[in-house]
Length: 182
Image (cartoon, rainbow, N blue to C red; front, side, top):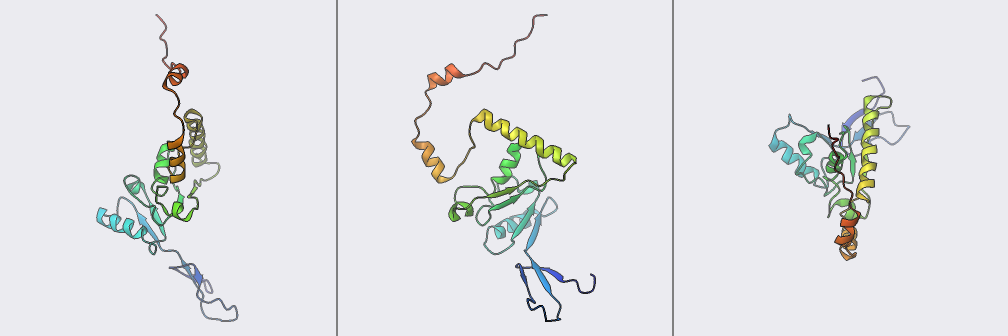
């Protein structure tokens, strides 16, 4: 570490020495950060997941696909950063679903879940981001609306008049591809 550079430790965001005239060493505290990947034993991952759902520790959880399915991370979290993209938008949606659930912190606080999809410009990473976003837009076109499961939306959907089955059949497209006789 270079002379005069602040020491960095995990903990809450704060400066231990806010007085600029004081010459003692400054310590910057960063959030508690933990990693869950395939190298971490399953029992340790389980403890880490339970701790993450507590309001105290850790504050940031970096997870590989080992926490991608069947895991609830929603009790005390409103931010998702996808540090690696997937070609399929439903994979990203499923990861986000670990946090965006009924009864989640975001719903209780009446605040949104923030989802970030960072990428490195002018690389394969950016190409993947653009393809995934394009696929997501096409999905919205085909499906007609963004699927939401918050209590207000599901109550509203339960009250709507269903689309008549006969009209749905009349409007259905025949997507079969005819084979040319050879």
